[in-house]
Length: 90
Image (cartoon, rainbow, N blue to C red; front, top):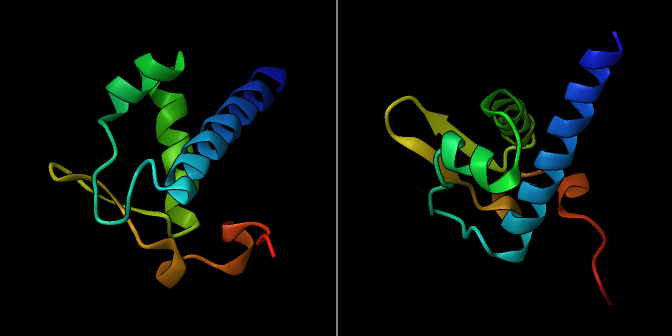
């Protein structure tokens, strides 16, 4: 059970990192995310971990995935919930 929790927390960390990149504009809306294998190498994670992170981002409506077409970044201001966007500076 501990191994499953570690995998989950790694996926959550990868999802958070990718989420920050999306929200900061590093991965702009309408653009594609790099392939899973490239992200896995870049982040020092397994492809499974990256895939789990992508599942989380898809549930948050930050990305849309299509087999053979890649992963597209959605416009979070139109698609994601308020909790996804984080605190606003004022």
